[in-house]
Length: 149
Image (cartoon, rainbow, N blue to C red; front, side):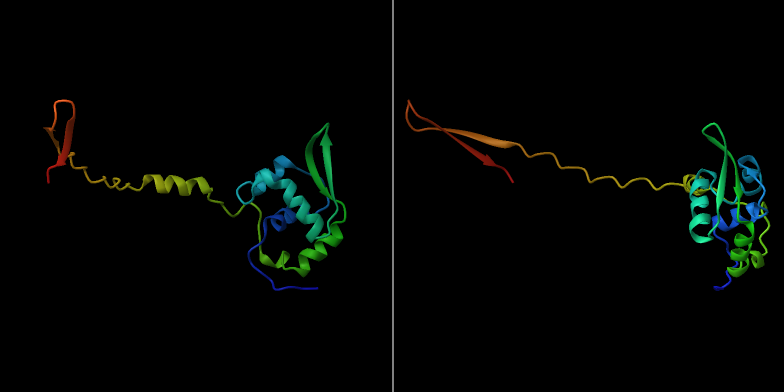
């Protein structure tokens, strides 16, 4: 089953190019060759994609609880997948592409001059109110408040 051959490889396919020999590859080796092309914190996700999409059997080699290396057990089937999906014909060489980190975009945005925020219009001071006292009776006092315009 062949699909359209894309020149842009997915990250797990880039990882497959490193693991295709069937020999154990340490995480340090993966980071040296693909560190600028894939996100290292997503290695487990890429291994899951290798298992589900490329039908690869991935063996994790551990030192205690820590994974130190990965190995493709069924290398011949994975090579067949790579041939069918155009991974081998994509002319990908590990370590050639340099990934621009997304934090650089933020640094570029910070370097641009910022506009001053628009100031709110000044509020007009409240107009004083006139108070007029009107007395009708000695016992009753009426106060009338008027606004001046």
